[in-house]
Image (cartoon, rainbow, N blue to C red; front, side, top):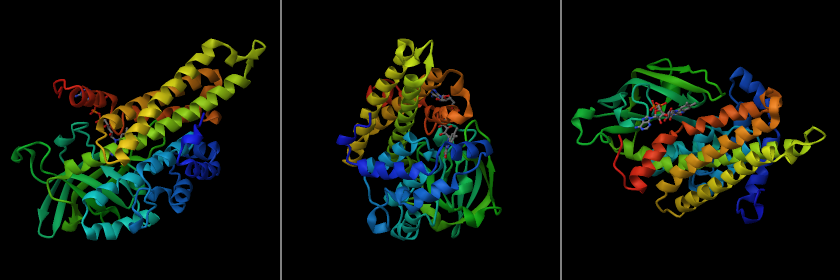
Length: 387
Ligand SMILES: Cc1cc2nc3c(=O)[nH]c(=O)nc-3n(C[C@H](O)[C@H](O)[C@H](O)COP(=O)(O)OP(=O)(O)OC[C@H]3O[C@@H](n4cnc5c(N)ncnc54)[C@H](O)[C@@H]3O)c2cc1C
């Protein structure tokens, strides 16, 4: 089932598997019950260099292609762990890498590569604008050598476990720009310097352990050189990072699906009811087989999207569809896994209900299924824009 012979990252997967074996189900269950952060797991991934996978070697990272990073995250999920606690440390830095000044790259990237600095908070979503990102209201006003930031973000994951935040804020009011996508800027905010001084972070309790937060900016002062790239072009910069994020999260969903399918298959083979394995009944086999087929189809599209990304080819179509299909495949596999386990699927000690809650997120974040369908309808099929 692991198609290892065709996999150029088989060795990385094997090493990640060994690391994950140190963090079994009871580790995650305890954290889940307490809604606590998996510090030991994240430290182990950091120390092994996996979270610096995409940072070029000249800045101290592993310089792997996206395919390598995807292999790491997929394996983390397939082993029953949860990369959602730190996956953003891999890709948020891409905005600095692509659009940051030489001084910003030199200052931040080597420290992000070693884990000395955690850049895993991404402040885009706001309570009033939701998916309509260009309507966001957080405003950064230039005053001399500073920006003064006012506004609010919601669902800023890992804000309490990050030193830096990549923030998207308006710098020109929307009614003063020719296009709504203009006048937004990206900033790298050193949260350690402003926490309690204009920055407030409030955790949101959610159905799974995701350490997501509300973040408030009240006359938060940040140095003018926190701006990344050119003022007003931030929306473009955020879009530039989205394909990588979607493909990596799609890879995580493939990992989840593999975990559910392996667990369901083993149980179906071993559980005896009416004097025979439940997996002998087609009513039990077929949902697992269907989920496997769904996962493999999605996996092929994830790999194609990653291949195009790594080749520098446009991959918006594949990245979006891969993310949607992989999230649906992991959900279908989770559903089959719970059903196969009957009552035991609901028992915490089997980890299925925890993974089931965790994987559900990816049909909503970082972008919901409807918005992916809108992208495909408009940009791939040429139908009229719906919003
Ligand atoms: C646990 C968690 C972690 C997150 N982490 C982060 C993070 O770190 N940083 C960050 O910036 N954001 C984060 N998000 C936010 C996430 O990206 C958004 O929740 C998601 O993009 C949807 O936005 P919304 O919740 O505002 O939904 P809304 O925009 O209010 O949409 C609600 C529903 O309506 C549908 N909808 C809206 N408009 C249309 C339309 N035109 N056509 C069809 N359907 C439509 C959507 O598909 C959705 O199903 C996170 C969210 C969660 C739940």
